[in-house]
Amino acid sequence: MISILITGASSGIGAAVALAYAQRYGQGGCTLALSGRDSDRLQAVATACRDQGATVSATVVDVTDQTAMREWIIDADIAAPLDIVLANAGISGGEDEATIRRIFDVNLTGVLNTVHPALDCMRTRGRGTIGMVSSIAGNRGLPSAPAYSAAKAAVLAYGEGLRGRYAHHGVTICVICPGFVRSRITDQNTFSMPFFMEADRAAQIILAGLSAGTAKISFPWQMRCIGWILRALPSGLGTRLLSRLPQKE
Image 1: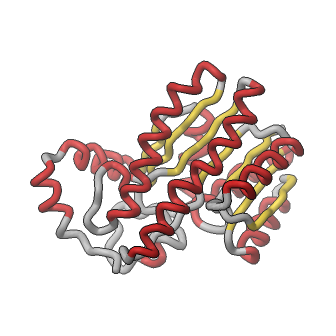
Image 2: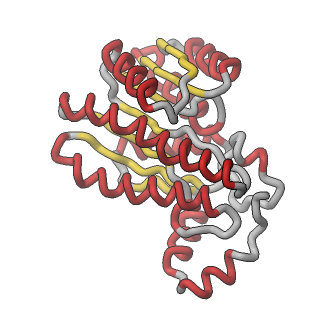
């Protein structure tokens, strides 16, 4: 029996990971606690997972609501002690002030609201794995998406720090840094997305990385290399090159 909680499970990576776990463990005993913003999409994902034999609860909950998130996660843990938690919910958008604040609320605060209740549950038992979804974009501040890259950079750094802090409690923290993966976010993009990956393929990579306890699950390999280069570029050169990328309005 394996118990998994996933935020942002109504589409994209979250939905694909939920279905992949259901396909792999459903017949042997798999409990999924799923959340998302879109009730209809979330119920469709839940139904697909149940068809694979998984036990599924699907809840519409706002990841920016600290109290609601803590209650949902604790209730899920009581129902079936959590083995894996995936803090996946995220948004993108333009750079007007309201959108910027919303991006930080969902992509950073939403991760904190997922991770901390999960940590409280897992360290008490001395076991568990938490996946925190960052992005290749978190390797460097991008002029094309300053808020998105900054929020993802914070998730990356925080996850790296938490990994060492909680390792002796038996809790494994994995930071996930995808490139361009099919999702409602990438569906909004009007520019070319190199090394684009389908969500089901990304899900298999994530499952393997979480199972192995990999510190940084970064993919595809081409984008992982680009991430290394972005981090190594001198500030002036990096700014000149990255400022040429298409910008979200």
